[in-house]
Length: 437
Ligand code: DLL
Image (tube, rainbow, N blue to C red; front, side, top):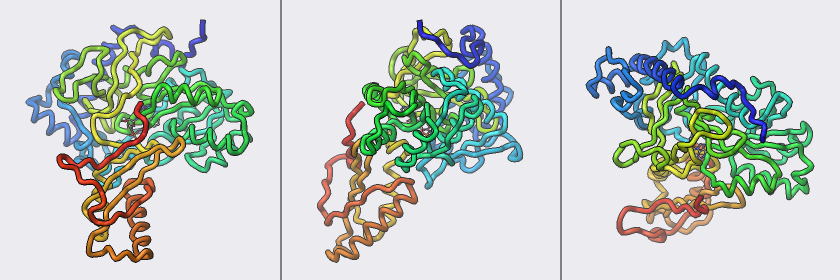
């Protein structure tokens, strides 16, 4: 029998009836916090719920309104702030949406809770204070870097805050400090593997044993490929900035779906069309309610992520239910090497550039193991002189402006007016040639 590691066994194996009681207690507090925000005061009033409203039972959750990303955008910067500003100790913003950002505020207690959830998550994979942790996720407004950094420190691991990129240096750090655990997007880890090959480093010569992989969709076969190539165990990690970031759901050592920490997040799975709950086990859109967040409580937040609840309990003994690997999204958000990009952001930039014509196309391909985005745009007719030097300047300018908006640098291709396909019905702007999951 495999050894099942726990960080906080009582909390992780809590009796389901007791868990439901705790959830109701915390949900009441969350609704109370929510009512401290202008946004929810108005939203709950619109739903006919008076301020004196209290949740009688967990099933009352369905009386509450959904919250969507646009609500967060419209409430920017502080329409969803539930505590006095002097209690806020950190903000995070969702990646890639510099045009219309969404902000999540955290009190000191919020950060402590979040770190606790991430500690619990990573400890479930068997890591301990004897591990050396190299964090290859972005530090900054993106949640992936800092969340795992603090949790790994809390667990007592030696942390190498490498951040992403600079693959040669990553390899040097891994060798010099005998890294045993890495945190990265799956696409970056595959890229790292190719770099190891190029450098003539055999994965077996490294001390690496585990990887935490998340922030973008990937398939079970990608996980297996990574495990086989690198000779390591790779664990799926799911989260989103609106729900803190990583630490929402994480695989335990059995790797059979991701445990959602149900004492911190109420989970629902709905049909994205009818908004009705689906049956346990059926696929739908994940909806979360924060149960422990003070500064930015969110009620019934629609993630757009498609997954399902695994009804059977996990053999590890944890009572927190599991979700299946994320199948995809019900909206048009693209995830490019872990960075979230909406096609509308690209359109917004192109449409402001005089030299760009009105037709464009976004092509996404796999280049090696990384995602590559190509923005093809027609050049406006009156400016199409064919002068190569000025065309090159336009191309570079578009690339730079896109980078400022979407935080990644796509390659830009210029096309003659009328050269790009025009579809008869709804314009098909995105051609995603990445292999499907
Ligand atoms: O990606 C938080 C995170 C960081 C999770 C590091 C795991 C590791 P956002 O930038 O807000 O936050 O993007 C959230 O990324 O709604 C999913 O669509 C997608 N996503 C995150 N993890 C996974 C995963 C972070 N394991 C969005 N599998 C989410 C599939 C994932 N998709």
